[in-house]
Image (cartoon, rainbow, N blue to C red):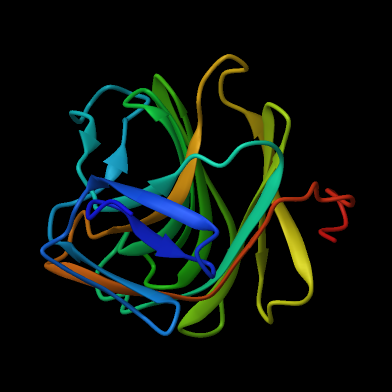
Length: 202
């Protein structure tokens, strides 16, 4: 084992830091990330704001098709505070599926796909302080799903980043406009199998 690696999902996932927070922990298979204020992953499509790629993130590079899911609970205090499952292929090539606080102060499922600039889309409002998120890989394509109970999944997005890119998957926390955000990822499940029902959620 390497000291720089973090192991989750019963040791199936060996993860490395893209950006390490000052406060984090792993306990009983759950991951806690504490994002500092002013942290985010976003590249403004209008070019008005400078790109920000500095939120704490922990990623792995599994082979083949897979499904990674987690229950995401976040202390959402300021707009755009979020906990997310992410895909990372480089500074201009990444995606995230977020449990995020909207400017209207509603917890929402939000997805962002970045190929040079960010394509940002809201999915639905979450009536509580947690939601289940899932990333699935299908060859060179990916599916984002979300669930209110961890059982019935709704498709949020189906897309590709770059068919030749080495894409890592993992966990992220952010607080672009606030003083910080603490996110807990629990019920983390990694399955090295292909999701058979993309539209229905499986």
